[in-house]
Amino acid sequence: MPQGLGRKLTYSDLPEEPTDGKRYEIIRGRVYVTPSPRRAHQIISVRLERALADYFEPRGMMMLHAPIDVILTAEDIFVPDIVVFDPGADDSERGIERPPLLIVEILSPSTRGRDLRLKHGRYGELGVEHYWIVDPREKSVTCFKLEGDTYLTRVRSISDRLLRHPDFDGMAIDVGMLWPRPRRNA
Image (cartoon, rainbow, N blue to C red; front, side):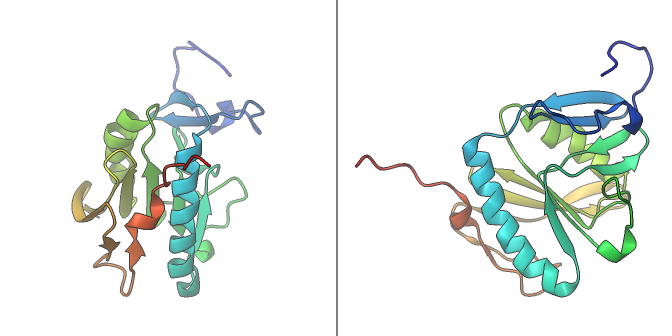
């Protein structure tokens, strides 16, 4: 991986198939390397993936999870936790090469700041219509919708409430089922 080249990086600078278990993203030409997610993060992801696939796939949309490249410019390549997109509108073999309908990021200690600030702003600038932040610390799901080039909070669900999104008719996600339960001693 080129480092300190004094130039912005692009998709061609990424390893074709990383073997170190890390995620490589390029945002505004700068590389970000993230370790593999922790167990709780993956539990939340799998549970939310099931709910999103159950909702979106019968409606002709595709739900995929990391690692999948979302290539929005030559210098903006993301690896979101979950992405929902129209499979008929994107025929790329490399990944998803147009703004998807929805990107979900699950906050982790190593990605929290980037997901809340850098990605939040950049996804909006690049036309991602819906951006959801899942915060395991607060046990919340915050759903943003793009208005112009800025995200506005559309709905927020906490703890064990149902997430009913006004833009997705009939969607009802039990947010309480996302959170891993404490392990009991035998």
